[in-house]
Length: 255
Image (cartoon, rainbow, N blue to C red; front, side, top):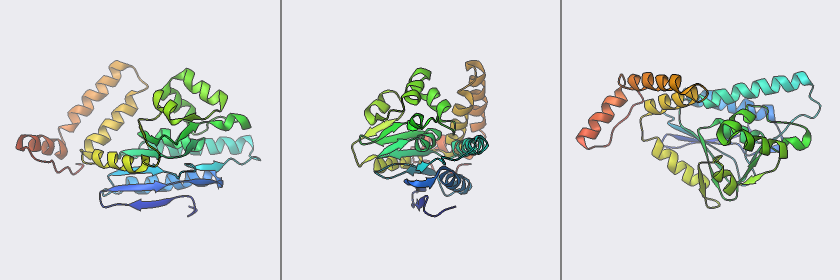
């Protein structure tokens, strides 16, 4: 994994920040390989309670696509990228993207695979690849359509235009909008709050939302029923209920 692709910072509150500014000389495969490596490493560490992905004021996951790639090369890159996004999506811990600058192309694909996006008013979003005869390749077209609707996703992909943070917030692409320069700090604050909750319930809740999103409502509700019942076999549920009765802060273990 090229060291220049990302930097890792772990804090005592259990949050790890992965910074991937990228640059226009970094290849998409290098960035995807770094994300795969870090996601696998972080998912297996119980002391890590939450993951925060971010870039810089200039951009997030900026990269280049090899111009001389064959159709076979392109298919392989897309297949690998989609696999990496599924790994990120199933990391099993709350994972937020904090955006201060441009989040486009591969950067937007990565952000869409996280639980949700927090951004500053200086941020912008889009899929500009159409100008080079390209479309999203890591599942971004599908995740975007599920998040903002089919017609809005087509507009963004067809035009290649970048939208500002206000518009991204209006259409539901990002969850929270903050003043310029404050997105990372406030995203970490939000993630720290989330990480005080039951890791077990967060993991199960995320799995239910993901699994139920693309199936019929009745079947999805059955998944929720079974997952809800499963919570009652956990230490976290017993601790949470007892802490409520005792009027104290629960001490969750993720078990």
